[in-house]
Image (tube, rainbow, N blue to C red):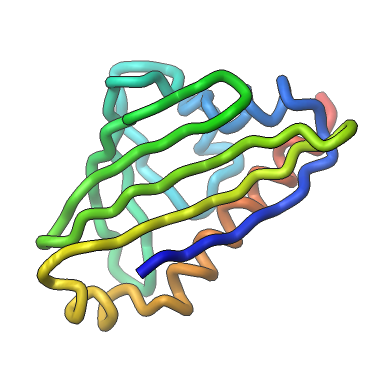
Length: 143
């Protein structure tokens, strides 16, 4: 299963990147990934962070490994839980005075049929859209 969404954020690349990669600020704007725990303040290649997502009533806790963090270009993290492997890519593209972010989440595994009951594609897409919308609002807010 692949879920892809994109959004255009009317803010400078530096601000969008800083908002997204500063894990200490996620509590202020991120309504999708909660309970972030890490030894590092920022998303950095080779590091991990744990968090939870609430697809419906009960939260699902997981740990991610940051595969890539290329300044102003892309962030890729992955993790597995319950026999399902997930890889999430965020591509940052400067378009004039804005930033287009493409979110592509890929799920694989022997228990994918079970995942469809816990995380139906429709709900995963809603969560992806919410994450991007939250980032847009946080990045477009002036301080």
